[in-house]
Structure formats: C-alpha cells, structure tokens
Image 1 (cartoon, rainbow, N blue to C red):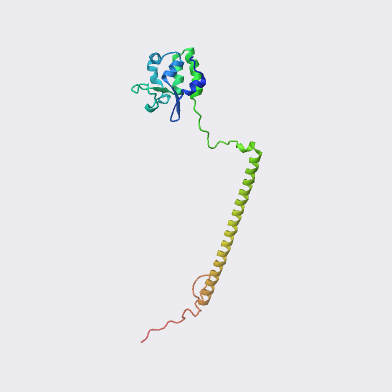
Image 2: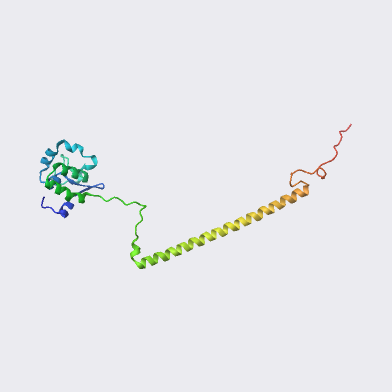
Length: 201
C-alpha cells in the first residue's frame, strides 16, 4: 500500500457531474503496479467494464504538466472493484477495500418516507409548533363554518325565490282558467267559446 492514508486518498477523488472516481495512475499505484503494467495485465478484460464504471477527465480539470493529447481515465466504484478483483493480489484487494468507501454515493431518500422532525427533541420548538398548528386548525374550522353558513343562506334565498315564482305562476294560471294539473283551459271557462260562429251567407 502507498504512503497515502484514507484522508489523503479522499483529496485525490475526482468529482464529475455527481460521479466520483480515481485516476488510473492513482489506482495502479495503490495496487502496487504502474499504470502501464496494470493495463498490460488486464488486457481485454477492460472491455467488460460497463460504461458507468469509468469516464474521461475533462481537459480543463487537468494539470498543466499533463499531456493533453493522452486520455486520462477515471474509474468509478464499479471499475475499481472490477480492476482490483482481476489483479487478484493482496495489495489490490486492500486497495479495493480502502477506495470503495470513498467512492460510494448517497442515494436520495424517498419523499414518502416518514422522517423524525428535529423539533421533537426541542421542547420549546415543539410547543410553538403545536400552538401554531392549533391556531391553523381553528382558523380552518372557522372558515369552513362561515362558508357553510353562507351556502345555507344562499340556498334558503333561492328556495324562497322559487316558491314565490311558483305562486305567481299558479295565480296567473288560475286567472286565465288554466288547469294546474293538465295545463289546458277547461271547456266551460270563459276563455273558450262554446258555439262556433256560422259563416255568413
């Protein structure tokens, strides 16, 4: 193992768009070989590493003394585990165990997961929260009660208006002699003539 400790290796971790990895030269040094020797020993096994297991370091993030024409590969957790396992040496196994915790990423917790609020451990904050919640519930209840009262008043006014319109309609029909049941003018009512005028000579 190299002279670097866990804290020193953490400074060598490369971050790129939410991904974390270590350069190929750093990985080879931790495994006790050179980068050229590591690639020679791995050979075509590198083709089995998924695309998520490595990425190229961006040009603007390289050091000035590094050759910009040569690609610098950075291996993520998947690539580090595969390479250290394929090298299959005690030092490579130790390097894998050391680098794996540094490259693991935290996943975002579910939004539906119930979390313990911090105010539970603070009595003063919890009391303020309960007081505010009580006022909010009371205001919501009062608002619902006022809305229900307004709705009931509007319904009563509408019923009164409908009853008044119905009475006016019945009175109008009774004046014209229209039957409220059939809607027709009775035969003996003055609104209909009994005899039919005969045509003139």
